[in-house]
Length: 110
Image (cartoon, rainbow, N blue to C red; front, side, top):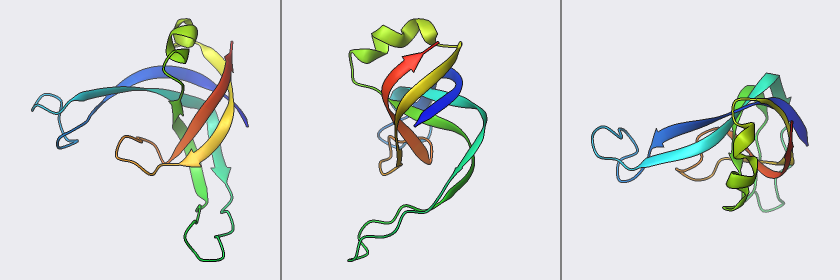
């Protein structure tokens, strides 16, 4: 999947309460892709045993980017600039996932 937008670093409250950095929660900074225009996804067929189900998403305008640790430095100069990001979409499944859809990044280009 290729998506176009602008990347920003955004800080969220983390453990222990995931409510307020000012009140003692750890600060967790993630890269968010603000899309040029909203996207929608289709629902995926559930596994036969019903254990996996990916719902449809509508009007998605931002998504958290997932990069390997060293890769952040490689792309840091592109923060705040229009980019095309290539990767694989997946749904949030952790308290550390800050958007409904995330993108496992394979490449970012200006």
